[in-house]
Amino acid sequence: MLQRAAQSTRLPLVACADSVLARDLLASADLPLFVNSQMDGYAVRSSDVAGAGPDSPVRLRVVGSTHAGHGPGPEIDDDEACKVMTGAPLPDGADCVVPVEDTTVEDTTVEDTSVLVHAPRVAGEFVRRPGDDVRAGDLVIPAGTRLEARHLAAAASLGESGLDVRPRPRVGVVATGSELVAPGRPLEPGQIWESNSLTLGAALRACGCEVTATVISSDERDDFTAALDIATGDADLVVTVGAVSMGDAEVVRQVLADREGARFAPVAMQPGGPQGLSSWRDTPVVCLPGNPVSALVSFVVLLRPVILEAVGRVPVQTGRALLSRDVSSPAGKTQYLRAALVPGSAGAMSGPPTAEPVSGPGSHLVASMARADVLIEIPADVTSLAAGDEVVVVPL
Image 1 (cartoon, rainbow, N blue to C red):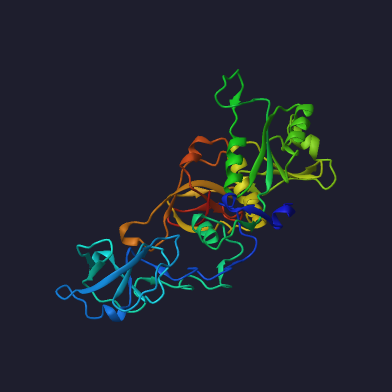
Image 2 (cartoon, rainbow, N blue to C red; image 1 turned 90 degrees about the vertical axis):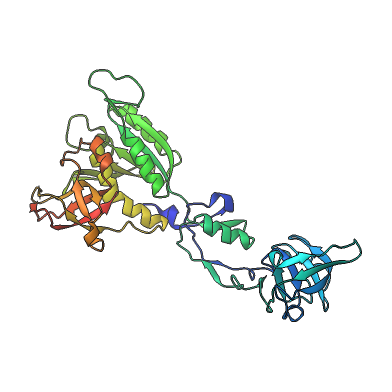
């Protein structure tokens, strides 16, 4: 269904955030790239400062200075120091850095500068060496990683200008219903504000998709087919919402059910029974029910796992919780109740949380769903559960 997402494309590094890496990133060089100072201070020979102390400072002649982005500065000889800034190359002859706070600059002339060192240092102290971070050829980011800021920092530090990532599936969304009005517009009798396209658009983006079109269609055949033409224009997948049941105005079912390979049938779940799968202009079309709760539950349970697998993202893991009150469920259907998780009490921090149902089973109860963060999954062969029973919960 999402074959393109299984391939790879190269994106500039600035566009890779939240994408999934398609190929292992191996270090092309040692990091750090060269020996450099870890502190602002003075590059010295450790043998020259071995006897330094607060009451017995060692005097060294300062022969130069160097900053990050400059060359390594003059070579250090016995009883000499070179002032260095953090990240500056370490001068030849030096083997450690004395932080500036452990030094005192004497009154000097332009020709003769000296520094007093008040603490001993050992070879390698406050010095960064090639390979301290990674060695050339090391695995830095494995394929399948969802790229975040820290991954991009690592790639940039290795000189990578772009990465091979899984393409973001392009998805068009069509919400159907002659009663639907865009939020913010006034309602006529019998109309409602449309929420499904916004809900599914946000859910698709959270799964790593690019939403290429969002269209609201009436229940008229010509209007719906025109919406499909728009949605499929640059899409790998189209998701429709509504008009898939057995009523007189089920335009999605009427237009798409007879196409080659189409399947429209009820699924034994509540909410979210009627579902469909078809195609339009060689683009697969997934058809979800129109009630807002049914649409979101259908997406979470049926479509989200497919998309996450296709884009290489980690699947959403189910959890366990204790039911807060008695519930019933229809026989023969897997029910998904909206619920809010409540952490365990102080005396049972290691135990499962409590799942508190936030509304009834009705698929029209969309506002109360805002309080939910999980779905309680009740198996088809279970018709009742008691408070305290352990249940499976699916994160929303």
